[in-house]
Amino acid sequence: MTVEHRAAAADQAAIREAFGRIIPAIGDDPTREGLEGTPERVAALYAELFQGLWQDPLSELNGGFDEGHQEMVVLKGVPFYSMCEHHFLPFYGVAHLGYIPKGRIVGVSKLSRVVEILSRRPQIQERLTSQIADTLEEGLRPMGVGVVIKAEHLCMMMREGRTEGSHVVTSAMRGGFRTNAKTRSEFLAFAGGRS
Image: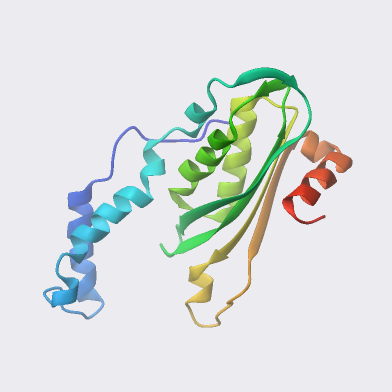
């Protein structure tokens, strides 16, 4: 399952214009000293935060090395920052990735780049978790893939009924990680917890 991406870039002029209307809409003065230039800053920031929309995570998995390795590879604690598509507030945390190669491996920095690209889009944590697993499965063709994400969501923490200190944990298992309980348990132990 190929993850969608677009071959374009953010329309910063449109973002500036839209954010220029938001400031007075919330009741503040867009000409106030602290807010002058804010629409421009937000436009540049959004172009950076959402650059994953114009990047293909599968391209990070090209190449690799045929090492004959067929044991579990785990990359633990990959930090990520994303934007909740429901409220456009950040959620952030760590991703733990594992796969069992069929001999071919890739550099671990390529795995973290997949996480970075997919997190730099308007997201929900559940989809992000699945997209990472699907990308690794498609790009590496391994015997199995496991992904666990633990994140905090500012849309929960900043609003009424605050849930500070709570985390959302999601997982996605493919291939042998889904069908073999022992493999899944080994990966979850590496990732920091058992099911």
